[in-house]
Length: 153
Image (cartoon, rainbow, N blue to C red; front, side, top):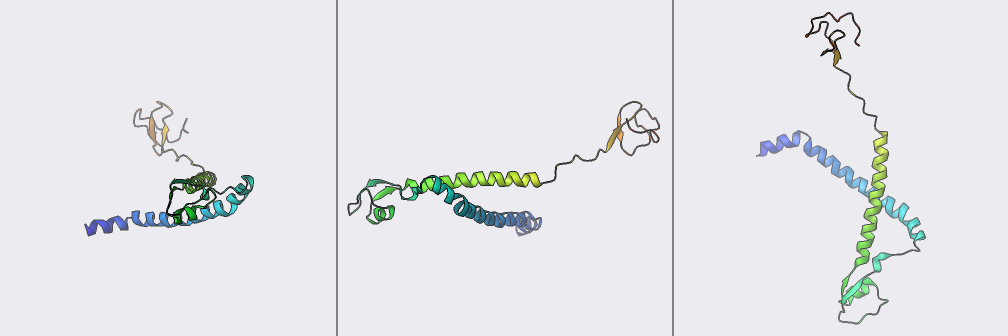
């Protein structure tokens, strides 16, 4: 079992996976910074500085009564049972924005890649019988014609 694990690790699968995870973590940090520091401030200006983090529903009051202007922290400290749907909305918006940003980044990266060029042909048609023969063939295996001096059709 240890031998199998060593073979698995040496093949590069584990190393490739580790590099992918490390790059993914670094990429996540960069994308989160892009969302938090570049995209969210203008979005906050457009939406009138709406902060969903303080949005919640009180299911059951706690030991002390709280009013409708209480913050989420005050409601939780009073012992109230709350549904903090605002945090969920914020996380959902962050996911949506990160997904859109990742889409455009991946799209841009795909455009930077060199276009896929088809592999060079390794066969050619015989100019006499039109059968497919190896590109380096000098005689057709099907009609036995000499194709050394004839250019491919």
